[in-house]
Amino acid sequence: MTDHRHLRALLDVTSLINHGQDIGAGRYILNLIKGMLSLDEDIEYILFGTCSDSRYLPLAYGLKQEFPHSHMGFRFFKAGQKMLKTRELLRFPPIELLGLRGDIVHAMDYNIPPTINKNIILTIHDLAFMRFPELNFEWFIKKYSRMVAKNTLLSKKILAPSQSTAHDIHKYFNTEKHKIETVHLAAAPAFRLLPSSEIDCLVPEAFGIKPPFLLSVGTIEPRKDFPTLIGAYNTARQRQPGFIHRLVIAGRTGWKSEETYRTREASPYKDDIIFTGRLTDRELVQMYNQADVFVYTSLFEGFGLPPLEAMSCGLPVICTDSSSLTEVVDDAGILVPPGNTRVFAEKILLVTGSRDLKKKLSQSSLKRAGEFSWKKTAEKTLSVYREAAGLA
Image (cartoon, rainbow, N blue to C red; front, side, top):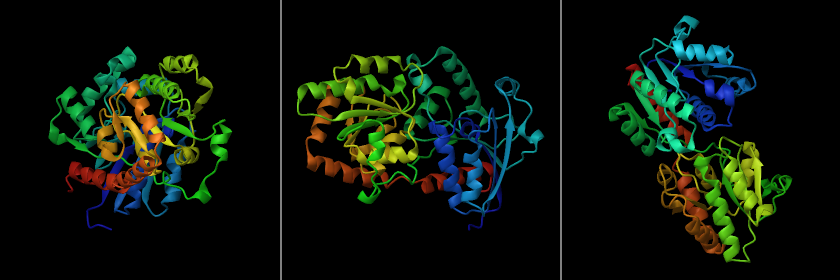
C-alpha cells in the first residue's frame, strides 16, 4: 500500500460492455483494470458506461469477484442507439448529474463522455483511419477525425500505446508533446508457453487443422493485409513442393473483407487455407502453442497485441516493419516491408526449414515478451492519473 492520498477514478468502460474482448479496446480495458487492481493501491474505481444490452456486463462485474477487497463501484446505463447519438451530439447530461464524481475521468476508447470534470485522461489506440483513409469508410473517417480532434483539446493527458501512435497524435492534431504519454500494452497472463501436459490437440482438430501450420490472428479487414499473406503462402508452396504447412487465419470478419476471401478462393491451395472465425482465449493460446510460425502482414498497428501474444507463447514471429510493430517485436523476430509477398514467402521457407533458427527465434520471442507486463502498464497509467489529479 502506498502513502498517496485516496484517489477516485471514473473509468468509462462503454467499449468493454458493448463489445466484450472481441475488439482490442475491450481487451485493453479489462487487462488494464486487472493490472491496476492487482497493485492494491488506495484507489476507488467507479466503472461506468452506456450499453444497449447486458450481454457483456458480467465481464465488468466479474472484476469485483476476482478482486473482492478492491474499492470498486459500477454505474451502467441502458440506452438505445438513438439515445447514445443524442448524448454524443448534445454532450448532455454530464455524468455528474447522474451521480458520478471523481478526481479523474479516464475515457478508455477515443470518446469522452459528457462531463464537467477537467481532469480527463483519453486513450487513443491508433489513428489508422487517418493514416490509411483508403482502407476505411468515408463516414467513419469524418466522424472520428472530428471527434478525436475535439477530444485531444478537452483532455488533460493522452495515453498512446506506442511511440508510433504518440507521434501520429502530435502530427495530425498538433497536440503538445507534454500532454501525450506512451504506455505500452502487454499480453494477458493466459498467453504463455504451455508444458506438453497442457497441449490439447483437439482444439486445432475441431477446425479441421492438421499440423504443421502457419498462424495469423486478426479481424478480417484491409488493414491486416491478409491477401499479401495468402500470396506469400501460395509462393512458398509453389517454390518448395515439400512445404506442406497449412495456413490458419484466426479472427472475426470485419469490414471490407471481400478481397481477402476472394484471394483465398483463387488460391490453388485454398483447401489448406483455413479461416477459424473468432476464437476464445483458451483456443487462441492452444493455437499459438501448436503453430509452427506466426506470420503478421498488417500494414499498420497502434500497438500490435497478436505478435506479442504469439511471442509470449514462444512462437517464432515474422511480421511487417511498419508503425508500432518494430517497437513491439524489435529484433526478436524477422521484420519484412509491408506488402512484400516475395520476401514474406522467402522468410516463411527460411524459418520453417531450419530447426535451429526456429529454436533461436522461439527463445528470443520469450525473452522479448518478458519485457512487457500489465503491471508495468498499470503503474505508468496510475502515475498519469495522479499527475492529472494534482496528486503526483
